[in-house]
Length: 310
Image 1 (tube, helix red, strand yellow):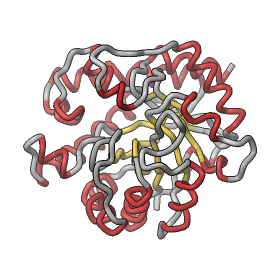
Image 2 (cartoon, helix red, strand yellow):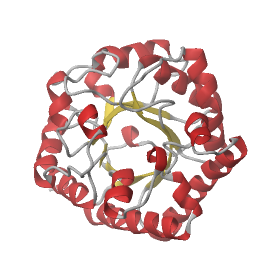
Image 3 (tube, one colour):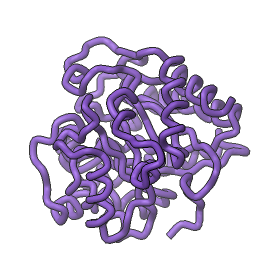
């Protein structure tokens, strides 16, 4: 187990990144089959784009006195998506290791004077918007165990599963991470009604994972949803809401189905999004990690920081 203090163990605000994949597609015009960022790391122009993307976020963290939770670009680097992209286990082992090393190099070159944690990212086995089939807990633990093991062996400070749609997969990931002895964070996505795509309310999903996991996740997050979609589900001062340690919201109010069909980027209103994070902070006293998801970029992060650190 790492001795590094995690965000929820400190009073410090931690900035994380925004909509990396949408930035790469809509701002940099990269072709990204399966919405996978990791293949770009094999290209010189891709590596340059990653640095161009992350450097201003390091600067924002420094300017606002926050820590920085530095995610690996491995959201799609799991066996099923890798197979669809023509990549076998050996290749996936290499790219997951390389992603951790790239993050450590960014920390070394850009993170001087900052508290930077390297966060190994795991994504859902299936579509992050539409869980067509649900694994059992054991199946999920076995499936995600490969990527989790590689990220842990490469030396991440923690592992976070983003955009999860269902409870059994979340429990399976948490159990897989517990096996390798690093801290785990579970981040659910929700629909416009504040419920998981499988129908559970956040409160029930968090309770079910906490009760079923061999080791409780360090904390939970919500990502890939607009604050309007879930803020009303959070009762001020409730015990379960204190388990939510971070938010990476969309700038767009569109539903997942609408976003899936969208050919242009809906980047919302950065100033409004910043103000909504300030409101969320009143509802979520344990919120230490803030960033963005689909459609957000450095402008949104700047407004979030301004709203929370002024």
